[in-house]
Length: 166
Image 1: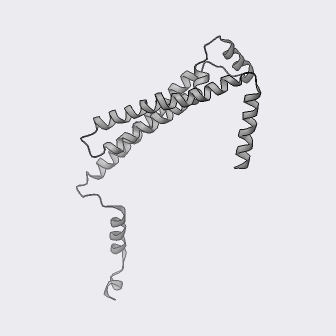
Image 2: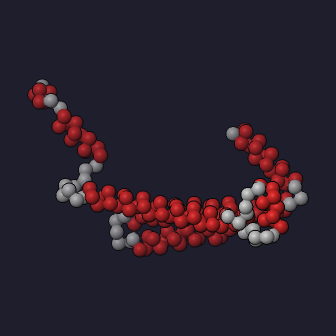
């Protein structure tokens, strides 16, 4: 914990000692405002839309999480990468970033979109697998037993006949 605070203090001193410290402060304030005023309402609206679409089903609360989690993570990544996403190609800031890190500055928008699409696709695939698993377990005609009940029945079935008589 102490090492974390020491590293944070060091980074803060390095960032705020530079001539561009007002931009760092503006970015932190802007990030907080962007999160509270734009991102939270957006993923709340997305979650409510999913809840309305699935309101007639018994699983609407579970399905909402499959949209809410990728939307929240995508918003968080957008918030973190916004300074790099917003760099105009050919600008002085983009050139400074490329010169300093030796990495291209134009790839972050595409990477954010691909990562976000991947998270939503993974969530959709996970939902599909869970839905098919639940559906297929009901195909046998027997009701699914809770795990504890199934374990008790297996234990009873494996007991030897001689132990039942005692």
